[in-house]
Every structure is written in structure tokens, then in C-alpha cells.
Image (cartoon, rainbow, N blue to C red):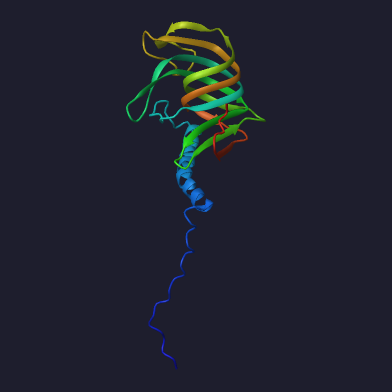
Length: 215
């Protein structure tokens, strides 16, 4: 009878990697960079939806854009504040708080420089049914649109603002508030958005190579 071999069977080898110049390698490298960002975005969205994210955190080094056909809210306050980055730099913002808000046809976009070229994270929702949020806080850099306010107060001391829950600023600071806010043709640039709860109907999240910002 033949003797059994003492040699250990060799495990099958993985197929060779594509050449450095092929599209497969470039897109795999893109995925290694983009997927962690998507995972972070998903975690951020989950925390925001569950109301676990505080309104104060270190902002990233990039602002992002939001647009909507219409934003309607109840209980609105705004005052000047500073958004702090992890590198210790501060950015002036208009800290805006809305107790309850709906947004029609919402778009959010963030342009990334990934080293292999630009890509855009695009989030859309609320095309059929409005996006609904509570305790919405926005670190605004710029807002454009046609706005209407109900029972507005401009120039009130920021520490005495009382028309939005938790929407008070420092004593002596310039503040404004209103019972209601309605903005059509919304285009805003912001450093951060938090919400006690957020319902994104018809959510679509995608990373698109190149520049595809909301506006």
C-alpha cells in the first residue's frame, strides 16, 4: 500500500491583485476611504434619530449644504455662537433652534477631497412626505430663501429667549425669536445639525464621484 504523504496540503492562493493602474484598484481605494465615512454618517443618523446626540460637539473642518422646497417650524430662536473644531479653532455661527419642523424635498450634501479626486455625499428625503424633526438645532453660516415669521422679536437679549426649548444664549447677546417660521426655496450652509428626533421619509444616501452638491 502507498504510504501517506507527510506534506501539508497547500491552501489555495488568492488571485493576484489588479494592476495599480486599473479601475478596480482605484475604486477599492475609494471604498476604503469612503466606507468609514458612510459608516460614521449612518451612526450619526441613528444617534440623531434616537435623540442621543448632544447639541454641542466638535464640528468637522468642512461645512455642508442643505436645501428644501419649504421649511416650516413652530418655536424659533437664534443668537450668535461659536462652533468649535477639534483643532481648537472657532467658527462664528447663528445658532438656530426650532421646536418642531417639517421640510419638503430635503437635500443635504458634503463635498469631500479623497486624494483620488472629489466625491460628494448626497442625502435626499421628503419628496413625497415631509421630513419631520423635533428640537432641531442648526449651526448656520448662511441662509437664503423667502421667509415669513409669526410674532417675531428682533434684538431681544439672547439669555431671555423663550420660544424654543433650550434656545437661550449668553446674557447681553443679540437674539431673535418667533412663534412660527416659514421659509420657501431654502438654501443654507451649516457646520452642524442636531435633532431630538428626525423622520426621513424616502431616504436616499449615496456617494457620487465628482461635485454634486445640492446648490
